[in-house]
Length: 110
Image 1 (cartoon, one colour):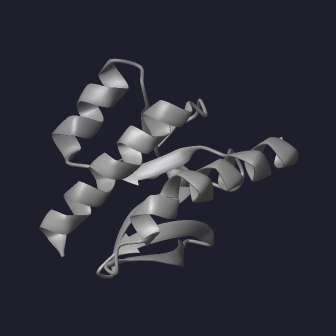
Image 2 (cartoon, one colour):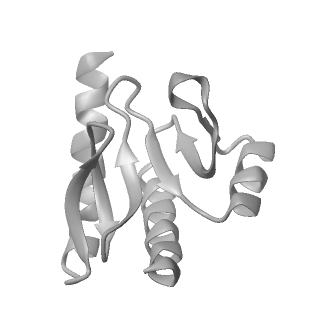
């Protein structure tokens, strides 16, 4: 699984490249995970243990994505984060769309 998680982290950074071209978007870490921020607001990361893409979206959107089985809840240490959704399948087009959606959501918060 470790090699798979590393491959997913590489995919994450590859897909994030165009977002990082924006001055407001930067690399960072969140709870030890590599992440992206927009004006200091966390909006996406890769969970190192699972390799899941994790993005911050409006709570109702997270509920919708979980209900449609596109995502699962993000619950590190058993505590569910209601504005965060985890995407276990490394689908390039879907991950890119979720990264862009999360960045747009972060733009409304910063």
